[in-house]
Image 1 (tube, helix red, strand yellow):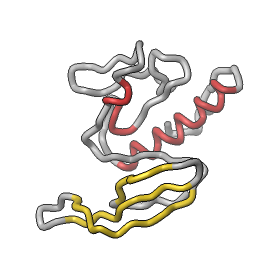
Image 2: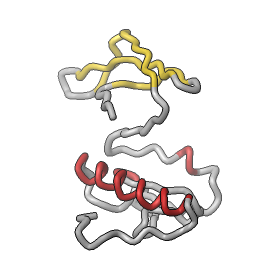
Image 3: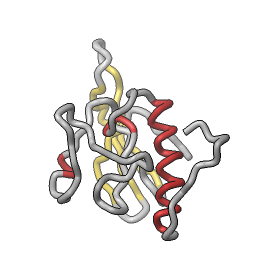
Length: 128
């Protein structure tokens, strides 16, 4: 896994992602630099920060968003839509990189179990 900080996606195709490199301005906000990179990947996970844009979910019937603007999920991080999982800043929880990373690990286990047609039961030794 490679994490690319301060990038914004400009274009996607099957295996290539064109991103623009961002920089932080004097106020600490990301600004475009005009530098572009092409990344090759077989999977993409967007980590968008603490302000979540849920507009992509608005067209999916059954996804519940509460008044705080976060997606409602079960303990397995699945929404009310079977097979649609959410985590990190878009669900009710502490909003930190550590929590979001843990959600990714937890969701991956539950996604795998769901795709295999069985429920995932976490071993007691797992912290998530």
